[in-house]
Image (cartoon, rainbow, N blue to C red; front, side, top):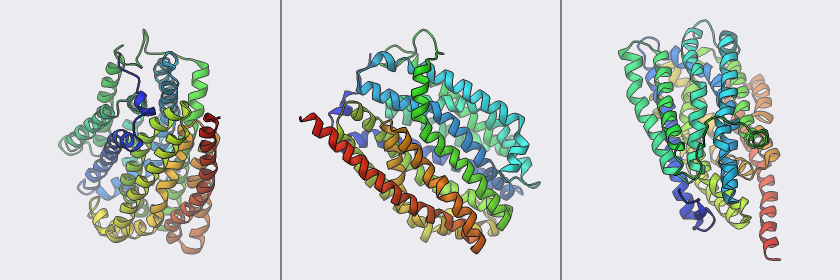
Length: 454
């Protein structure tokens, strides 16, 4: 049996974060490239590229909602696993995998059924028009059928990191990205499947990766593994994990609502091409956000383990270092957005009208990128420590509480310019609120250390 990852409580923080975050960064960057590759191939479909790319933008809210459902179980269970390993509670930790499978199958199955039944009304609600709904329907039909496999794969990949195997999780993600890049042109162009081919390639890669995860966790040589059954359910564990996962669930749900509303506003003030431009900006910015999420993944097991072991100083140390890394990444994204937007957008489309809209929107939307890294890392810290209410509030604040009012009010005065500017305005407000909450948390962590010396 593998040794428990006790190094999380003893090894130097900077070395630990490099060890755990770099594989996460590579994996999440690969995931971002995974999505970008789809968009690049779709955007260059002869004759249909611009409208097909716009249709994928219409699908963002529905895909975000599917992701939100998956994070309820996946994030909660992986976080709880790290906490339990920090407490050396291996018996309970081994009960989590069967719960992960059951919860994802039930939640994913319900979401799949409802989405298939109400596909067209949902796509219309999220901004599809007569020009784009055919492309959107073709893409989402395949993605929806694969939701259960996608959720299970991402949940088990998180478990690999939580149990001390970040390199294995990274390698598996790289496998899916490379295979997707190979299969995309085959299904899209060679088989003539268009946007539906991109979806088929995506789901197929995730099914293969899931098969590996199930095989890996079936071995009793791993400290966390399946026992005699792959399905299981504990009401107490489900309640705890769903509570921990509520923060990222609400964050992704808020993203769904925001994307829905922004699509409607873009359609109102700029037409179909404005939605396509936002899709390009989203895909580009996603690259930097996913790098920060990789840092989050590296921080999560370290912070959770040490919080479970009552090592407050180590929690503070890994948090501060993570913020520095995340801020540096977002500054790079800011530089590309403000000084090289044309180069960034030309990767996705050759259509001059679509490119011009995307370049202008990118400059405005990403004005506050340098301060977003702090907000993302801080939100994740509360989640890592099992502080559900704080995590939920911060998850909602940036995307919902502050952004939605801006999306409604600013376009009334400035049209589509107001839609773009809503992001930096709400990001700045969220940064200030998060700063005050983090200062309060740091005091609590300091009190933990002081209590140990008494």
